[in-house]
Image 1 (cartoon, rainbow, N blue to C red):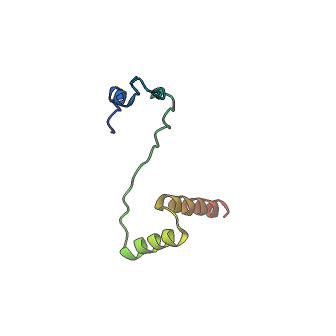
Image 2 (image 1 turned 90 degrees about the horizontal axis):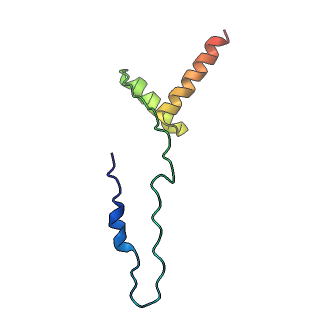
Image 3 (image 1 turned 45 degrees about the vertical axis):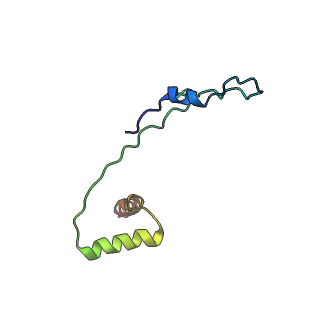
Length: 86
């Protein structure tokens, strides 16, 4: 998990009155201004298969420029559509 931002350290960058014209100090944004996205719920599986099957799957994904998860989803959707169409 990333370290939280120490807002007190940002004070060193604030403009200080020095008898010259100076720009006003930039306002420090509230950390809650941009809410973080919902956490992505990912899972992971390991599939044991013959090397030629794994290589075919990798090549299929590479040739179509898709991630393994995207290609798996496409294959499952097509399989379900085929089974329902019997």
